[in-house]
Image (cartoon, rainbow, N blue to C red; front, side, top):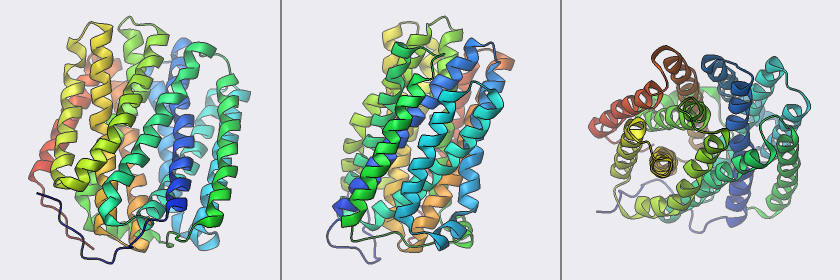
Length: 390
């Protein structure tokens, strides 16, 4: 049967300019992140840096996500949300230029922190804006298009690695220019929008954690699986005897089918019970991670990895759709901020613990550990009650 419709006020017509601006900005950053995670991981692995240290370096991004969440109220009180999005895109461009200019590990850690800080603002404010600009009858499909844009960016980003190698900074520089151009295009789009996300506060973020624990758990699970897949799994493939080009290709294969699947996931979210779609997505991701060490054929590995990506990212599409269904006004920004913080915790745990597990127990322990964690999350989703609408 169809999902339960929200009882809170809903806009009649979508604000397509706002939706386009949000999807464009998020997609541009996703290209940057698609390059950053595997390229830095592979470059550090090529220098002999341990998987644990590679995972620790990735934690810098997660810390940036958390920091911007804590400063959200102060930032939105001083600058309009759409302008903050543009400033954050410019900041991401400058961070990418830093990666191109130096090979220093401490500098990269700080740049990844800032990249996480700006990315968090793009996603927090953009997702709240998208939900405010979208009627509930189209929410799943618009969330699916948003997810497709993000995953498409992840798929496009790693394509530069086989052509440019892991030692050149040209890939970072090229992406920095691209993100700067997108910032300009986003500014043009904002001139014709008729909606805007409302300002929020840190207090409302805390309230959201209490009101919507299931949605927080969905994003936590997504962050854990997503960063383990794009940051640690490329190192896993190299340690299992595959080439660096195969490891980079795996990230594209993870993202491209996921991008193609998200509009269909969005359609399912508009036609089926949304919580049940979430449970199915978590189950698929868990199964994909668990069977990965059993596969030896490169083609089978890539197919399975594509399934892993589709299942794990669909969790976020589900959570984003449920956020817009159940909340309005400033709680949309608060919810998006809570999502960013949950993603920061999940991604930090996913990259840090998976790298450490690989060090201690060997490469196959990494996907098995992530799969078991997702089994726990799936069980929690299955037995949790649907949260009340706010």
